[in-house]
Amino acid sequence: MSQHASQNRPGALLPESMPLYVQIKNLLIARVIKGEWGPGELLPSEMRLAAEYGVHQGTVRKALDEMAAQNLVVRQQGKGTFVNASSMRHSTYHFFRVLPKAGGSMEAPTTEFVSVETVPATAVEHDRLNMPDEQRDVVRSVRVRRFAGVPKIIERVSQPAYLFPGLAELYRELQPETTYGLIERRYRVLVVKVVERLTAVAASADDAALLEIAAGTPMLEIDRIAEAIDGQFVEWRVSRCLTDAHEYVVELT
Amino acid sequence: MSQHASQNRPGALLPESMPLYVQIKNLLIARVIKGEWGPGELLPSEMRLAAEYGVHQGTVRKALDEMAAQNLVVRQQGKGTFVNASSMRHSTYHFFRVLPKAGGSMEAPTTEFVSVETVPATAVEHDRLNMPDEQRDVVRSVRVRRFAGVPKIIERVSQPAYLFPGLAELYRELQPETTYGLIERRYRVLVVKVVERLTAVAASADDAALLEIAAGTPMLEIDRIAEAIDGQFVEWRVSRCLTDAHEYVVELT
DNA sequence: CAGTGGTCTAGACCACTTA
DNA sequence: AAGTGGTCTAGACCACTGA
Image (cartoon, rainbow over all chains, first blue to last red):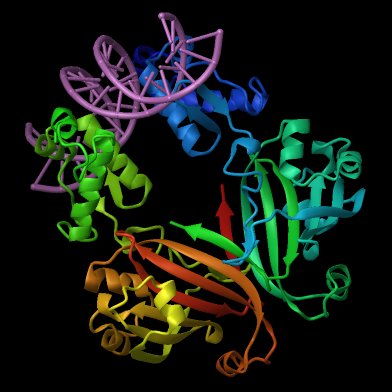
């Protein structure tokens, strides 16, 4: 793994002759996935890692800087480098983009589980979650989120059962506010990326009943796939939101 | 610009509290804004900039790396560092997130200008665009975008007239596909950030007439503020989209 | 106080582009 | 061949943290 060794075997040391700092970064990510350091835990210092891998501190630094840029770790001067935990992110609602319209109050929503069941996956669920053929079951749950007591969002969530044994019971028991915090603590699965597809739809009869509105009311539908640090798809969620007092905010650069 | 010199000028344009590479970065950004190098043009090499500012190459490198991370410049090994031009970005439609639904074709939309006028700003326009009190006029335009000939999006755009003299005439004359490419080429104003707020709305009578649909059809409304490299707000755009065959896609990390 | 990450300099070699 | 950005090492000093 030393610079000298890689120079003497061009293109041969590792599957691809990637830069040293990229190799270090990949090794560190693999160790984070393996759970060697849990969410929120302290990594060894730059100097220790450099000694361990036989490279210069600056090389480890560049690897850790890139991991920090990807939100995999958080660096704190004087303290050290920590595995990112969702509790350490911008907020518990890091991936939650539905906010009160400008001027509205900032209170967090409450969550009520309408139903939780473990059932065979539909073809669509199986496909969207990229599940292996031999795995058939999903944990399907329906939740209603209320702002100031008023129901505004319906979430229909499907998750591969084989990744999360006992998840249905956990949901019934804990009724957690945030899915990702729970699966991170209980299953050591860290969600690092979501892809959302937004459309405008008319409220169905089911929606209307749950939200106490007229059927046909325009709603914002958010179709989300959540991806874990190892690339597994861990959730397919379809949310329908009333946007009379809230809006979906996103910043693009 | 040496570390020593900046320490001797507390509270100056470049506060001593900032790291050297941040000061260099700010100076370089200022020069880009001033137009010293136009969009797509080559910056001096790291070595030249380091000599010019009297710092080490590595310090300039860190400044340029951060500018590259912000998409202000593009770095190419063996060639040099270039000011970002929207034509060099991921695509001409870098900020355009409305895409055909999965499985749909990928053809680009056409743009038709319905109206262009220079008029006094409403109170809302003045506020949203953060315009100075003494500036009163906006260029207001309405466009319809068609996919495969079918009208799907109405865009209502307001821009501060004082920032873009002659813009209304340019719009009438050129009917450009993309606003940002035009104002970059003609006014050397580079849009680097947009904030979008999405809601679901019912099509108005106006919308229905322009898109040949029934009033009340659910539509996706995208309220966008576009920000230039110097922090100026250069556009307020409200788009209404039919999402029967298209969707708004965003990836969050 | 020792240990951590943050900044800065210095110099080497590399891969890529252009002429 | 010359010039560019990309990588890596090396060592210095700083600011911040916590015992």
